[in-house]
Length: 412
Image (cartoon, rainbow, N blue to C red; front, side):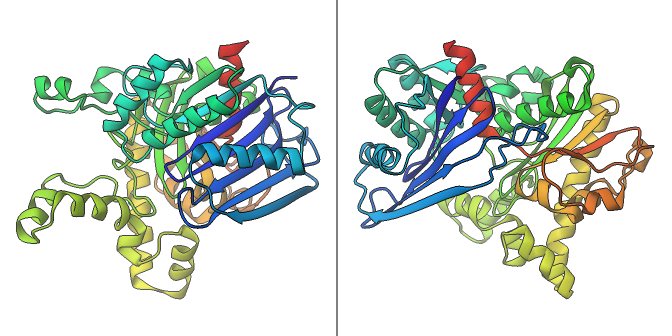
């Protein structure tokens, strides 16, 4: 039994999960949030059943669970980790009976330096800190979590798993921006891609589900949540992805614009006299579905479409237009596809989005079965017809399990 504690840390919160990597079952998960604010919150859930053997994606299906919540001041991440340990001691499971062999940390940006899960050393911490210039909203929080976790679990190996690592296999033609080469090299301006842990998990789970060698498959994976990206995967290797230097590029998202003409920024700076921080806030927090419809949640947007709301309908159409454009681009780049998978909150739950994203791609051999697509079953499921030349799947992602497995791979 290889048990791993997985940590996903932000600047004022962190999530955790204690996972048995052999079975894929979580023993417990939790959230420590509002760190540094007058009142923080600790939420701890204990699971009392293992995974359903029929769940080919490795996602744990639990029969019973118990959740406790506490509100109290949490001064910093170190205090938050102590509260996490208190929750394990008071509510279970015992960290002695289910002792972790390592701690795995999600780190958003590894730049071009980290292309695989990496054992954390003081030098690695320095590198993560230096890469904060590329991910100022993410890497500093991850580093705080790493330092607090190393203080709490000083006798265990700690491993960083980078969101960008999976995309380090992209060829130069995919990751290079057509700007001054010297300037780009000096300031590390290139496309890095994100959601790599999810894209890797889903592409491998799809191959396992189909009983086909990963190396033989051309895959397109749509990770559609509040943040969204799509990746072209050839033989298990990322060859192109929609996100770029930052997670802002690419698809329309909950609050992010995705692709825009760069001159829009200059135009708004000149005509609307917007500052760089204001433009950053606009494109990252006030655009996407929210900017178009006033709603950032796809469920609300779809409700608006049902009501005939014009803004919601336009937002939904723009969202689908971008999905189709990337799907068509990657079909061309891969020379066709064997498998297309949808994952994350929107991808796993919205039959309307899945059908709309592929509605015009029948020429590529893609045929959706409406009944299968409407089925809200659990685990991996096929939504294409038996005659479709391209297999279309819904694959629940499990980034925590992927991080745990990669962590064991480094430390075993």
